[in-house]
Amino acid sequence: MIKRIIWITAGFGAGLSSSLWMKRVVKRRAADYTNAVATNFLANRVKATKSTLLDVAQEGKRIATKYEDRIPTRSNQQSRKSLLILND
Image 1 (tube, helix red, strand yellow):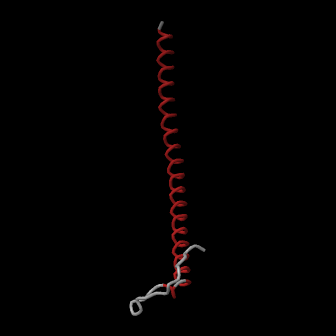
Image 2 (cartoon, rainbow, N blue to C red):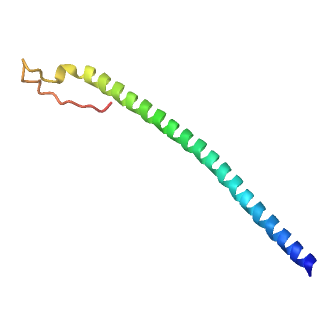
Image 3 (cartoon, rainbow, N blue to C red):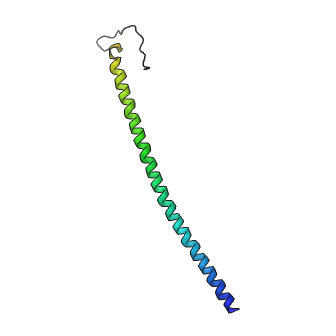
């Protein structure tokens, strides 16, 4: 009877300690993976947004200089009667 109690206690202790150890390892690995992926994702999205905004700004400047003569100025409030088309 004593042997059974010892083996049951030892099995319970080994099972409990291994499950707690595995839980700790899995949490640590998941946190490492999540942080790396999230950081990578955010860095890539920021770079993509920055390049998109720069491209939009450059395109706007290019179009504005192309059609600059059609935009009325303060000294000459009347512009030409032409249609300003911004689709290229």
